[in-house]
Image 1 (cartoon, rainbow, N blue to C red):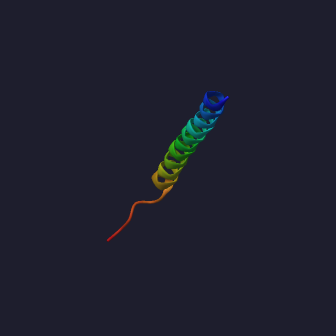
Image 2: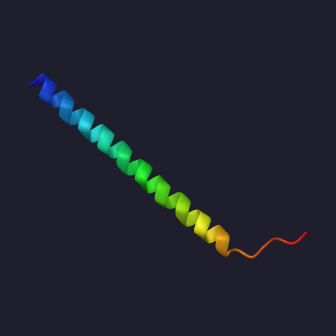
Length: 43
């Protein structure tokens, strides 16, 4: 029983971490795309 609960808990933690990393990757790509749309800076 203990090993089963530990396995389920570990699986949920790793799955949550994987979802978080996937979301961050999509966020970074979206920010880069927005920055590419910005006009060039003048000095």
